[in-house]
Image 1 (cartoon, rainbow, N blue to C red):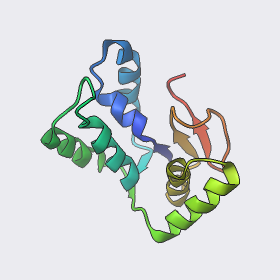
Image 2 (image 1 turned 180 degrees about the vertical axis):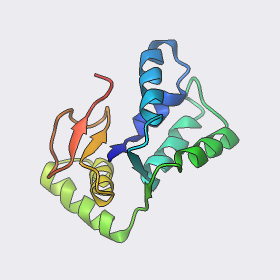
Image 3 (image 1 turned 135 degrees about the vertical axis):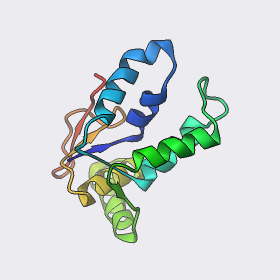
Image 4 (image 1 turned 90 degrees about the vertical axis):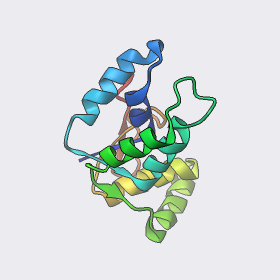
Length: 135
């Protein structure tokens, strides 16, 4: 199973002409079944997708409907255990806390790969490898 980072969800709704190749690829990824995500990813999606300064911002209701549709994938809650593991991963791998929480949520879901544009492509974080599908 592969873990999807927030940028995949955001590209999937992008109406920016410059991002149309990424939008198509993101939607192709989301059409697959072997994906997982976390509450953090859904929260970040909501905040970024509805941000007033975003050129193609969506409204609250549309964001909520999309989040409901993304729940077709397994969703990892952010637990105290994941938070503590993320604090350790932050120190071990020199990541931001939020990136470390993505890695640890994916590990908790049994994922060995994180699809992300934000983390280092090909980097292995203790058995969880990052793949940038947009490179």
